[in-house]
Length: 231
Image (cartoon, rainbow, N blue to C red; front, side):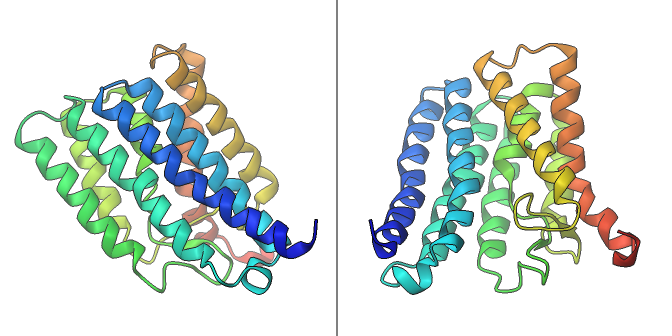
């Protein structure tokens, strides 16, 4: 198999995220939150591996007809933003006008952020919260912190999308990747378990999900505070 065929197959792998988003949306309409999040986790895993494959086979050079970055952004908006926001809205965790407020804020602010040409930093991290609502909403489903906390988190994270705060990419951010990537994989494991078990998880899994989420959310800002020379 020549490299151009392999590069094309990477694009086709990325495109499967659209199928997983459809399956997740179908589950969300049926309010089968466990199945919905399982499909979103599958989409997240695909999103994690297609990037390294795209760089390995240099898809821009070997399969230039299709824009992998654009394809990725379209799928990410569905799986990272739109479907999780819909789930939060329909879950009953935010009753009445609070649900409408949260979902409108999430989808509106995220589409602005996703079109920002400056979202990536020089070390392949993100400037501002990268719209990973799929991860945040999954944790909210698992923890069920209450309406006030959910609204507070929604607005705090939305504001953070447009602040000069660094958020790592667990695969592409090289600094501390030896810690960040394993913790990201741990998060995927806890998230999969939570969804599989209908969010009825042990205290160990509960805190494992929360602590790994906090690491992934805050480690980029910690890197901003610590000079690079200290690594």
